[in-house]
Length: 92
Image 1 (tube, rainbow, N blue to C red):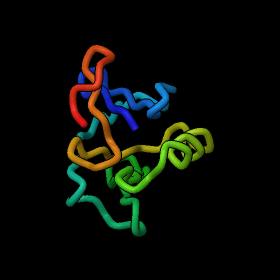
Image 2: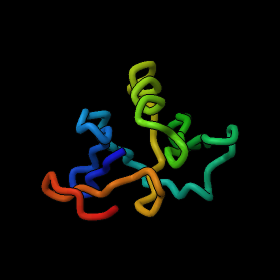
Image 3: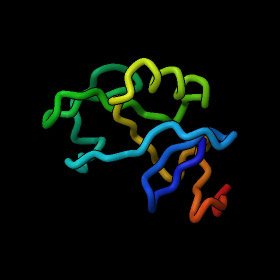
Image 4: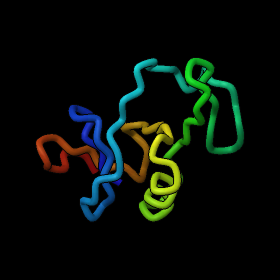
């Protein structure tokens, strides 16, 4: 998985666009209500936020195709993420 923190865009490792992150609430993961093992619920918008740390690109794509409004939690230090700046991988 690749993430451009400046554009807030998520891509697969093959460069396929997944989604643009656009949460207006800037919620803290630890302050969200636990929904299950990999997701939490936002009290502002009532959406589930899915932790992407253990998702494969295929899992992420399938989830977003089923529900494009799915919110994502991405930690810049997680093992399955590569950081992009201006289209170039700058981390991992």
